[in-house]
Amino acid sequence: MTKPTASAREQVRDRVLLVVVLTAFLDLVGFGITIPLLPFYVKSMSVSGPGSDVTGLLIGSYSLAQSLATPWLGRLSDRYGRRIVILVSLLGNAASMILFALAVHYKVLALLFVSRILAGVTAGNLGACQAAIADVTDKSERAAAMGRLGAGIGLGLIVGPFLGGETGKLAPWAPPVVAALMALLDVVLAAILMPETRQFREEQPPSDGASPAKSVRLWDLLADRRMAAVFGLFFLTFTAMTCLNAAFPFLSHERFGWNEEDVARMFGVFGVISVVIQGFLMKRLVARFSDVSLVTAAGIFIASGMLLSAGSTRPWMLVVGNIFIGMGVAINNPVISALASKVAPPQFQGVALGYAQSSGSWARTVWPPAWGLMYRHVAPIAPFIGSAIAASLMVFVAATLRVRPASASEQKPTES
Image 1 (cartoon, one colour):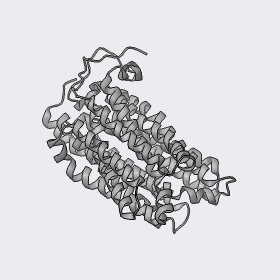
Image 2 (cartoon, rainbow, N blue to C red):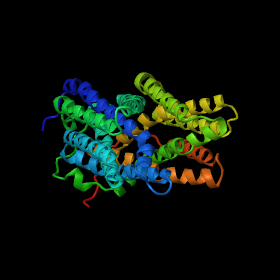
Image 3 (cartoon, rainbow, N blue to C red):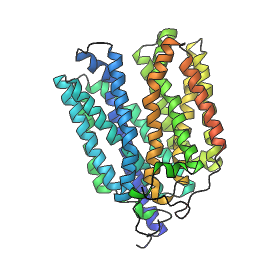
Image 4 (cartoon, rainbow, N blue to C red):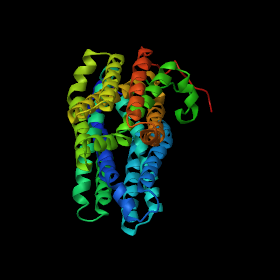
């Protein structure tokens, strides 16, 4: 197959970025619409035992499904194409929201679990979205493009809770129905605007008949210490981030009397920080600083913010600490995604980015209950100290990375 010209690649880039960013935005709007309301839905179903435990299991089932599905969907996108994987995932997301609405309306807890598991599976399309960006961008501009994806995620986290609160006033089942309609709208837009992107890779895989979906294994990727380091960065990043969901609401309430609205406002600030940094500043940052320098700075921001939050004696200290955390996360996430795409061989972009995202999903599955136990049984500051340690480890792992992009001929994994 003839490789597309650079001009053709540039022409399709903006369309791909538009669809991918919109997909991330609508995915996170749906996530933001439903997640804040989960405790109330669980309570309405008259669940025996602590409702927080059931809510935690629902959130954990979503993250576990996402961690298992993301590499699989990335593998499928390498084999069959990014476009079809993204479209099918969007349809699955819409179906999960319809099941969510039915579960709420008929008060069926088992169906609620099914809907969250399906939502987690379809949320695994993030690896395919990132692979599509990697296909149509140069390595020098990839972190900035990943930043746009992050800005879409941040904006979705701002809009989602607001829509959930407003539509929830109409009926309990209204928020997931709105999320389903938005996912269906995204299906239509993606079907019209989204081209297949694999042919636009900077370097095409060798035409030896090997199927990427069958030839790459996790251990083959981990054999490259740079790829292993990137996977470690994803795990450490989300290890630190999960502290915010698991411990921050309790600490802010017990120390300063913050209620749900106060916590929601703080999370809204995170979204604004993400949009500003990833949407407007990331291109300048990656032009001036190396990826390793940015990850190092992000780790320092996150660790400092966690320690300031842990030692806060005034509300403003907690706010400033969380602003530091938000800045670190906003800088870090698109950069480590770009790193994953740079060190992975071109023909394995989808599966490599899928495994990277899966590393983060495993952290989101394991650490929230661990932080909760530490908060209750060790000390309220323990999750924040642990997260600061994780962020500090990010700095050391980043120091081992001196990225030299892998070529298609450098790594040819064995048949599984």
